[in-house]
Length: 376
Ligand code: DP6
Image 1 (cartoon, rainbow, N blue to C red):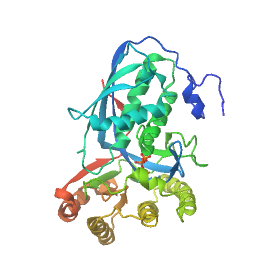
Image 2 (cartoon, protein in one colour; image 1 turned 60 degrees about the horizontal axis):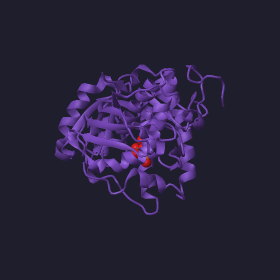
Image 3 (cartoon, helix red, strand yellow; image 1 turned 90 degrees about the vertical axis):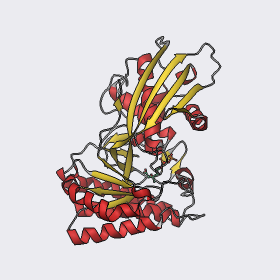
Image 4 (cartoon, rainbow, N blue to C red; image 1 turned 135 degrees about the vertical axis):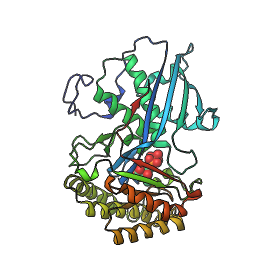
């Protein structure tokens, strides 16, 4: 749907289609430069699990953008003298040249080349580090792919200064999605919806959009402590897990349940119905893992300590009239979510009761954040 003649200059109500991101970029001559962005990780409340080509979600999802778990990426670029359509880049991760990361970036560049043709015209030096330990089990693909996508959009902006802010952020999210689905929810804050939903204005399968409704005060500055139960490599990657939703016996009902859950969580977030919010978020987490346990082949990513923690959360909530709850991503770690007004008590509960179930007693305190930040 094209509502306007010049989409670059439009700031509102644009419904961008894949073709719109392919517009030839009126290239100014930029010989070299340097751009840098910091982007956070995110944690889904209603989960994305199941996708189709090209990296489109089978159902809409909504996430909290985090603040402290983030990736910093700097891209130095210099015009290549040859134009052979190949990609030329180096990756320096946490101070070391990383050949092992190259195939993933090569594949990402191949996927996005038709939208950012300049990727083959420059040599890139990509320097990146995470605020959280690499082997913590925290997915670095969301923050990593979104940071790189923001850098590429900053380069596009230098080549075409005309692009609007809306187009800039939507295309950054669009590119990030092609790197890793959930990465498209890391560009903005503080809640982001990815996937077309009839009750979410401007929502799209192509990119994430900020949840634009007002949220009740209890959800402001919401806290998330990540309990690092298992820092090892997962036996089954998310990408493989998504594929197993094809032909899954419960796929159709799961996808329509997620659509309904987005409608429900929207009203809970607005009204402050925290008990209903908790029930929905925990059910989403367990449904995600139930999908894994009922796929063919089946698998389990939770560990005994994941269940120890969940049981302690339930007991604490009942005994203390508390509003803590948990969610899980595709791994054994537990995200403990709670309102800011319980912070002090919950921190001491974590230290005395929960940290013993974490690998090396390791956990990370985080909270709602506001998305990508340009680094000068
Ligand atoms: C369980 O975004 O990591 O965290 O698109 O294959 O890169 P790819 O998968 P990824 O999947 C994340 C799945 C999840 C739920 C979610 O974040 O919504």
